[in-house]
Length: 126
Image 1: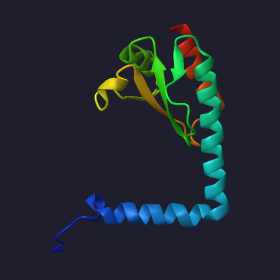
Image 2: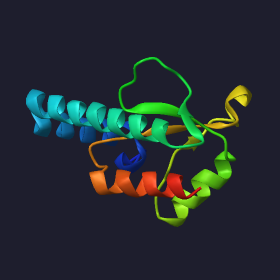
Image 3: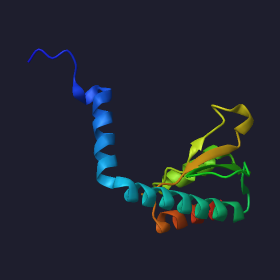
């Protein structure tokens, strides 16, 4: 009745949600999710690199995020993806001016193969 804070806006709620997720997934589940993320990201990165006008900006290894360099304006690429209801990446130019022609792509276990195929089709249409 005389609460001075609200759990809905506090860090405790995030900690509780993380604890529930971790305990529900368990070690094996977390490993499976991590492997899915890495495999899906490797697939999408490899396929994007095969697209004309796109390349991976960095050659090092990655987990589930990677940077794509585009010959097309990044805003155009991301707008086209957004038209298909795809959040295609984070434009990096506002944060790193030297990467103004790049965007960060993230792939998680929630991304299906068909979603990745749609993503690739949109890039191919550009």
